[in-house]
Length: 460
Image: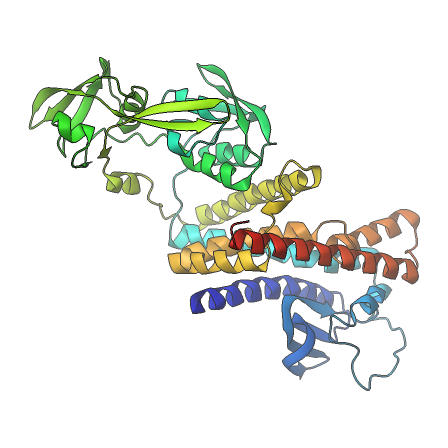
């Protein structure tokens, strides 16, 4: 619990600070007066004054703000920002006010927060690549399928031969395993066709439920290309009864050469309860073995999948070594940072569009409880995992902040865009009204996200 609380404080504190620092630095760069820089909202908990700016930590850990002089919409935030300063006198407009600056200068100040979030992600991914290394990216080749994890409507995937390359998902081209996973994760629920190279179209029905979609992704394995060597044989299993031993290397199955572990597994799974002739290498000799896999069944609505199970395991260490991260130099690390940031920007935008269109379930929204839970899990996995999560969350916060909702940065940019088209700004009353509407929308979104967190927490 303590680890989770500390990790959550670090993750949210750092990302809020980074975002608000962007606004602050840009405001100072264009000579805008900044009375307050706050981490958190509501009444001040602690703080100090340096120059014209009061730096504070506020009681409500729901964000932060940079209070800029002469920004009319700030009136809508007086309560959230702890109220007006006590004893403060009405001020006269000045040339250091936000509204007194040029349109490009104001746009820069408003955009600087999300730009800093993107920059943080680039740096974080680059640091991970330079210190802990970059894991090799498997191609979009389906190495194996775990039938027991497939949700109903997707059983056709179990018939795809190991090593088959997936070219597209629902018309969306894929080239890497990450592309394939993201395409399946964000595609609209319902029928979708995968085009498999040298095999043709394979149509499945994607589930809408997040848990079933996660189960589908977990059932699919990339092409490992590891040898079919048995590292463990379960006592009392069909493999044990047939005389298979740890260390045996399977070279033939059902009369066909075995090119790797996933080839062997696919043959066994496709023969439930049916004898399979194997040839294994043992102590320099080839030994024929006849096995009869156990029968396992996965049933869905109007659909049933039967598969075989032998009771053997591969050497997990080989897999760990095959996909071990490789440290890269500074230039490659920076390139990795930009590549990963752009990938997650595209993915996040795709998910946001899916939420708006209904293609992605609104229940997938995560609030502070989910952020805290994942922060704790990432912290226990190490600094690299925590930094990776922070980079992704930073991109998520940046994209959400760019939504054209008054109160968010995107809403402010929308007001500036309207001003650029009209040649004059919207009236202060109009901006205040829409800002209050945006505040209600954001509050409703937060309540929904927290409710989704609670339902997930209690299995709802």
